Image (cartoon, rainbow, N blue to C red; front, top):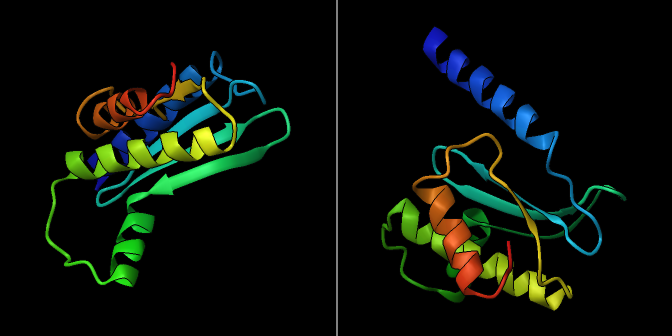
Length: 127
């Protein structure tokens, strides 16, 4: 139990350290990523006006899949994170955003976080 709390505290410390240098503007919003045990979330945030410009997550993808009647096959987290990266890039383009600042949220740039970032870059976001 103590170890889990230590991990949360350490991630929180890393996130605060990173956020000193990373801030979103209307022209270049912050792409904030959160990774839970089961899901990945991404948001485009304008810190100046404290507004979320666009958001995508694996939760949204699963809800959309159920609504369309798609089969619910088990997929690995990296593939799901890539889909979220593509979705947030598409939503960013629709909102008129082409360049963002990446905020990994205190998580290591590895695995699902890296997959999301790479997919967003391939889909046209610049960071």
